Amino acid sequence: MPRAARITAQTGRYHIMLRGINQQNIFESDDDKEKYMSIGII
Image 1 (cartoon, rainbow, N blue to C red):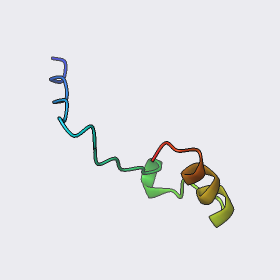
Image 2: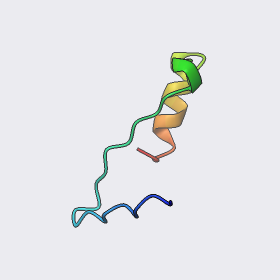
Image 3: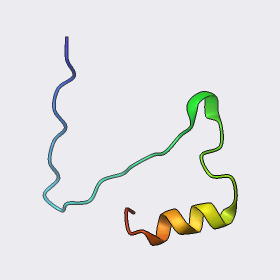
Image 4: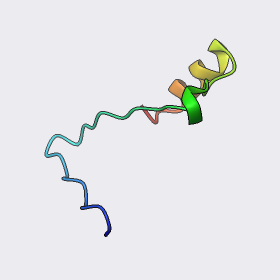
């Protein structure tokens, strides 16, 4: 049974969480995290 579609927010803002498999770190360093944040995805 497929999951129901997400509701589209009127504000266009969503809460997004990033998590690695088995709670593994996603970013190797603070520089990696800063680069990700600067791309404008968040």
